[in-house]
Image (cartoon, rainbow, N blue to C red; front, side, top):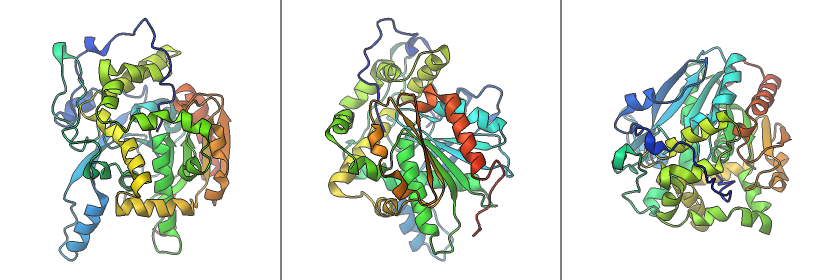
Length: 408
């Protein structure tokens, strides 16, 4: 959700430019080649899967109602979501990772590996529009520039149009998280733990709230069994605890409302701005920053990612952009009924610790709050500690064996 360290000065000595490397395959047209080019997790087998989800969840609901009795439940418009899975075993507890801006599933690798080694199944989602997931029409086919350099592409549509932004409404994003969890749940209906950072955390709060609301007093199987968030407060507390200092930290949200220019700023020059904001203290962090920035230059990714901010601001001004968004907003007020862990960054330059005040009001099964000596990119800067604290929480909430919903 945040451009935490955007104000860092650009280093004079630049690292190896992505211009010197061949362009990444476009996953919209070269899925097999795109998957083959993805970095992996050392010593861990990773499988890549794609699931189809509706671009507009409301449209899918309408289609299902109109097709009642015909057996047809296909939405009019769909897009693909990419999942990187490891430790696949239906007998293991499943953990679903949701990344933030401007990352992708790759940001979770150093947290995923210890969990697999501890006997958990893990899956990291490329959120809609990011990396290998579908771009929802924001790929205009311009994936390569002079000399084979990657070239980000701008939308063929006006980024601020209502139809465009509805595809990035929080209701659609929460529905994506649920669809990925259902995919992992399988026929046994094992429950899934959400682990999230930044924008992924905002989505996780909404998805878990919708799940809790659906399960209260109804015969609806519970899908999620626990929630871990990193460097993100509860979305309502972000609004309620907002003070002038926090408003100044959030300057980039206003910047992202402009058309086209934010894409050029963030993805231009081989995503130099992305490389500058991510931690690069070690060779490992440097390599990871390069890989995340490379993924951001895939055609259409920049516009899709920035539209998360445009949709969220539009929803604040006009109300939810969809019925699913309205449902998610209502559910958010009701909180979650599963155990929660909040890992927060003491040195986060974009989200102050004061935003956590009142978190317990929304965590009806309890919440553990841990403040780490880290900047915003907590799972990158403190991967080992994040993995250890997440593992400890998972052990305290049931361990590594699959848990089946009591209403399955």
